[in-house]
Amino acid sequence: METVEVGPGVRVLDIACGTGALAAAAARRGAEVIGMDFAPNMIAEASRRDPGIDFRVGDAEAIPLADASFDAVTCSFGMLHMERPERVLA
Image 1 (cartoon, one colour):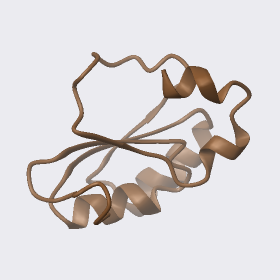
Image 2 (cartoon, rainbow, N blue to C red):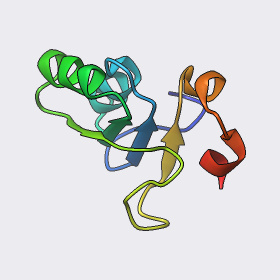
Image 3 (cartoon, rainbow, N blue to C red):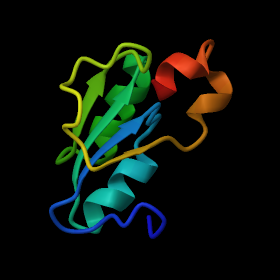
Image 4 (cartoon, one colour):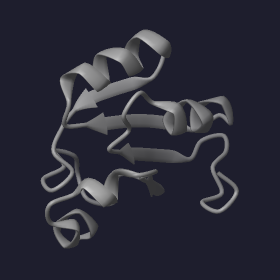
């Protein structure tokens, strides 16, 4: 979290969030967080663990959010599983 300077008022998108551990850590620091994962079961578990965080099912290659709407984007281990990581980074 220190690397991306997450804190109060910082808007964070956590892609491939899985069960939401990184998103929850950002939220505990005061960030405004959206966690996104393509797997509905992961989103369900993340929402169960941290119901106050906005978790959404979504495709990291086609994020349905406006460009430049976040201050930081995080991804713990998801890039290893991306079929086309260059699209995710774009």
